[in-house]
Amino acid sequence: QVQLVESGGGLVQAGGSLRLSCTASGVIFRVNTMGWYRMAPGKQRELVADVTLGGSTNYADSVKGRFTISRDSAKNTVYLQMNSLKPEDTAVYYCKLSRWGANDYWGRGTQVTVSS
Image (cartoon, rainbow, N blue to C red):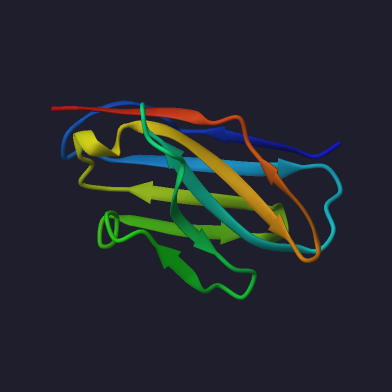
């Protein structure tokens, strides 16, 4: 059974940093992109950043220059380094693992709260 487990969320003051981690356990075939999404209260879930198996990255405009995504493909682990955090970054952050021609997997989410 495949599970994605996120960690690293918490409460931080504006301007601070957090590092999220997500590890997928279990036997997984055809792994492609891994990424982070977030959902703030009253808003739809949105892409924050993702990284392909080849290392190409994609960021939401709102986090460019502040967040950095990376992955360790051998460990099926993806990281999100978040710097210069703003109150508007407050959300539940979800990890997603996408596969070639097969279903995606999602984590349960980790709360990030940025106080002003």
